[in-house]
Length: 519
Image (cartoon, rainbow, N blue to C red; front, side, top):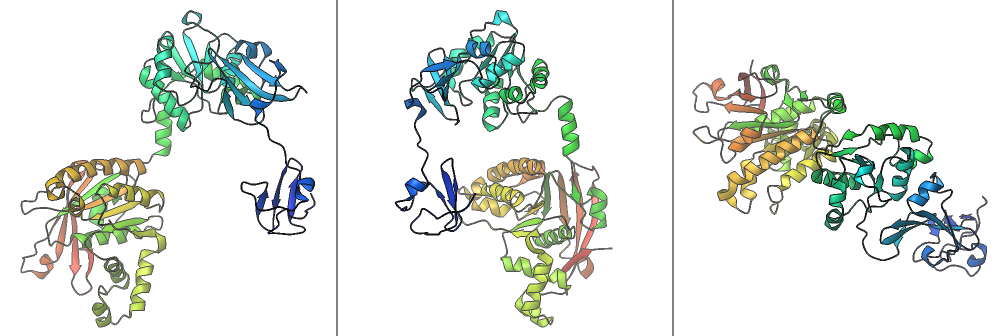
């Protein structure tokens, strides 16, 4: 279509406006639609050159005739049985559909999916003819009125089918209809299992768990779509062989087996490059918590650093880190140290070892590998449970595979209950984090301080929740320099792979400040 002048005075373009004869237009110069809400001022000629479609409330249009023919694929006798009318204006133009409920009427626009009620009060009745339990052992339920009539027709006009008045029905509805629904041996839901549909189905299942089934609507979202698309036979056979309904967190049947095995990969892992650890647990594992515990002064944070950089050696892996005892620059400078092979952890260290600050920055950037490394912080006002939100954000928005938390006791101190409630706080956090790691299929690595007797401080429940527990041991008082700087790793829990015991060592080079596997 040829472009014409824009109707808006503030634009004034002579050849950028695209006008559609159905009463709409768009200007490619000022980027505005016409008409639009709170329209700018228009030229006087606009109403004549671009006449707007006059809109009327369909409930204000006089209806002079009704028909049961030609209603969305329904046979006339079915539409009449279900009290579904197509109402027309004086000139024969279709205006609206009317759905007769026992004590109210619902209307829907012929061209727009908008509803009105004759009496402006909630409907708590099922829609459809008066079927009783003596006519069938089964009662089918749909979301919409058209769908109820469509399914009845598809099933050979023999099975009772009713429609729920709305997907968000409440207590008044179930109180009024419970006895009627319960009079059938099977209640079969034949609707779309979107959020609203799933919520409605879940509630019906809770009320009638032993008799609630559903129709697998795989090809179309509702019964009327099956009918109008010419796929009535597919719907018929699916409806005659309903499946037992289970909520989203319950799984049963052949399909559940196939889906789980096809789509889930339990205990995925990324190797650490440390032969001892990788031999016993293959690497760091997803789908649960890894719990690393060590006494004070054994270099816990440096072990976490070793693992973080090991994960980044896999090109498809992303990490996130919460290092609560250090600045962000400390974290990045440590990564630069491993990248350069020399200590640049402070400005003085870098200068002493012959590196400029720009070289440190470039090394840190190379080690972090862009958005494959995400560093985040807990704010001083954050509740410890906020960590769950941050971990979910890191996984779902930034796509991280592993989240490192160093160290977990610091979280307890953020709680309003302080030390007194530390154990309770970490117990709750641990159980929820374990579930979140499984749900998102990520690895969450907690590092924890232990007391002098080897017991985990405030966080014993985290050990219980973890799928892998590593214990770090280091003799910091040894007179042997090599032994003094060697951290031994012991696996005392290994749910995925069962191997327990010594998993090798890490040696800390004091000159380079780098950990490496002790051969």
